[in-house]
Length: 626
Image (cartoon, rainbow, N blue to C red; front, side):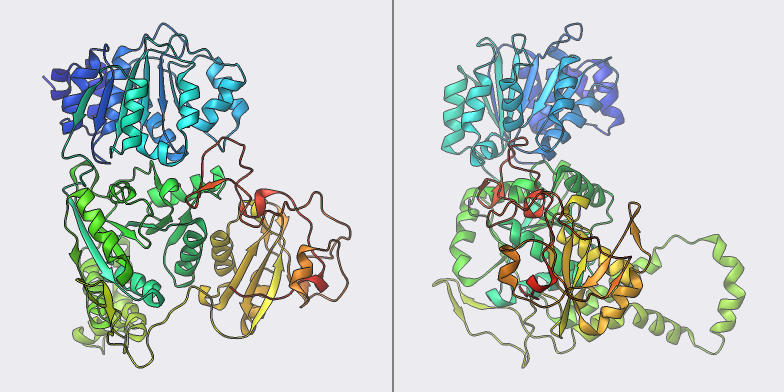
């Protein structure tokens, strides 16, 4: 008999999860499933992120619902859109052979009308973020009278995001006779109070020590001066050629800036944060799951619910404000019994926070040195050699072997190897030539930074474009075309065939954008975008004249002045609407640097508020820098 069948799971569900690769239950599943299948008691389950909590509550939930009753019988609340979609997808996969099990995802950033339509068709299970669920309840389109199970998943994070009032309101619409199942990776006092308020004599299960980190994760920290942080980060990435990681930042702005800097420097990276529309978030996550992205730069809230296989590294570019959030960050790697590495880049003042985290996760950090240039080059070289050695041979190459051999007739085997390695490897040798030591020497007993060795010139990289003279250009694409600054940077580089290091500041507006390019590369831009179209619309790139940048925020209309342009004549007149100025990115409500998921109430979520806006006159624009 299958191990899951021994726990009480039915054969049809076991068939589905076997096809998904489930072989044996994890500890939380093994202990939780028999208790939850009884269906007569509240439950609190504490286990690290990545230990299979979704199956721990999802499998018994599917066994307990009545498929003949097309009414909501189970409600799962979770903090983010990504986690909502992940749970929904898992439940659909688990129920593959059970018949018509209707699982409806309810979350912000998507059409509420379509979600209400899906609910009216009859939903057995609803998976929802609190903000959007409360919006739908207030529209009186749902009946919770038959709900017998409510699940609070990632309860600690929902409280951190300020959802307690919403949870109170939602659960007040459900029957008092239901069972409440609470799952969390940590157990702060706020979660303890939830269990006291919503539950009666719950069965409590803790797998591992409370708040303890995953035993399969290695925790490392690197000490660098604040000014060398980005250079140290890049060096760690280069030292791990096969890295497939998530990089955590504290704020949306920092997330976007680091992603853009990495794109400029030739890395496959992109940002994930609350200012992206749902379509943009889905696009980024698809690229990451397909591994066309090597690094995902994310905020804490945006990364919750990311369940991607084989994440090798989690890098804490900035340590979280809430020390317990470190458990959730590091849990993105070493999932399903695999191993992973969690790195933190800190300065001398943050040593105390490292010790705090050690006490909470009950794991010691290993202090590691930032590798020097020679070590990075050696690691990259042998990674390349290993890749060549293991490449799958293509028989179609055989037809060219005679010509290839003739080309190399006068070259020895050793020279061929050296030339091949140099072709791929020279940029690393050039970049790390005379690379300085980036390690900040710290007296850990006093937490003071000592003077470290630096190269004569140093490696003080910034997260900006090159240092030459820049020309500011206009392009008629913006956030309403689903462009972020990172998307725009990549779009310009791909079409104009220029290095990202040649591009300076990028300002993405509603229906247009400005970007800076080193003046020597302006002709490349115009040539690259000549006769270029985007979604059937001709792309126009024009030189923006200098002017007073402050007046761009005060004045409206189109000014005079010549512009160098491709793509036809400009049309006069104002565009519809205007940008809602709120002093920040979109004017959405934020908590701890990240937007809560409150349905559609926070605006469209793109840069500049996502609203259509006018284009300022040429005399109003002035080239700016970060």
